Amino acid sequence: MDRGEQGLLKTEPVAEEGEDAVTMLSAPETLTEEEQEELRRELTKVEEEIQTLSQVLAAKEKHLAELKRKLGISSLQEFKQNIAKGWQDVTATNAYKKTSETLSQAGQKASAAFSSVGSVITKKLEDVKNSPTFKSFEEKVENLKSKVGGAKPAGGDFGEVLNSTANATSTMTTEPPPEQMTESP
Image 1: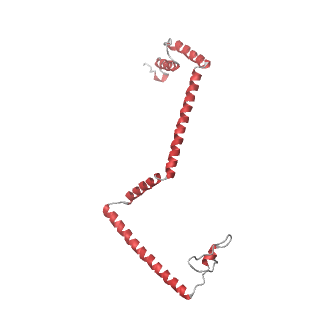
Image 2 (image 1 turned 180 degrees about the vertical axis):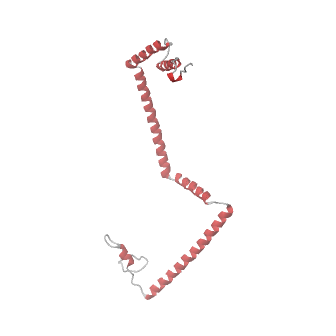
Image 3 (image 1 turned 90 degrees about the vertical axis):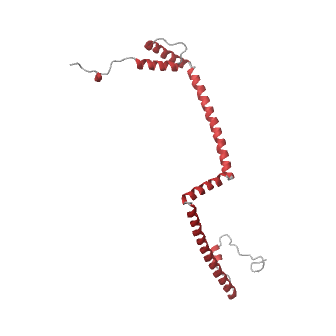
């Protein structure tokens, strides 16, 4: 079929690469006077229908607003309902479900990783506590405590030693600062 043939299958020329599509669309077809008159009548009819539909739509919107006013439905309530419906629509999509599932799995993996890191840190701290250097430091603190506050209670650990040392030094009575001393007349 060539471009000029008329029939059930009308073919329109398609813009080729580099060809200006606007020029093709704006180029008037060669129409007979009778065809032009028919198109003008159809154009007028479509414009009238559009005008009628616009008027009907405006009347329907006015009626809708009146019904909402009578029912006490405010714009804020409508907005809330639209947001809720929109969120419901979003959560029902496959993309949301897949994203949610992926994030859930990522959260589980991150939780497992943090737990693993916590276990490693705990193990390292235990290793440090059991190291000869730390043991030597602990002994020096215990010796200091025994000199300051008495003998170490049996079975005490390093934390208890530090706490008792802190308590011992805070309960020691000291001479008040000079500004608190009052002179007798």
